Length: 122
Image (tube, rainbow, N blue to C red; front, side):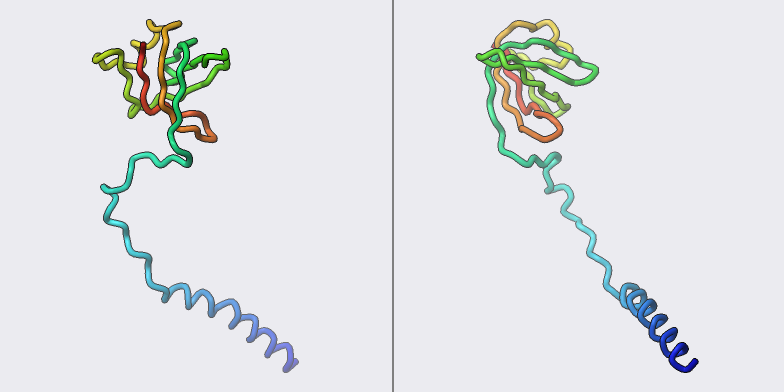
């Protein structure tokens, strides 16, 4: 019986001590330099692609470009994507009228899909 009481006391102590230590641990300081952090962080460096616009889906924010070999690339177009034709700034809906036109795209390859950084028509 005495061994049982000692065993129960040891188990209770083993369970309670980590909880007490955790409650006394200092809290992590809050980061106040949020304004200095970039809006989006990408895993890989930007790449370039030249080809022709195959399709545009403004609702899905998707642009499909065929490269010189006819390989299609799906590009996710974000609100930060800079779209231009000459000196004119375009919107995603404007791209619908530019199917089959030449395009140069700078993008970030990501696991979830290629994210367009800039799109230049012509």
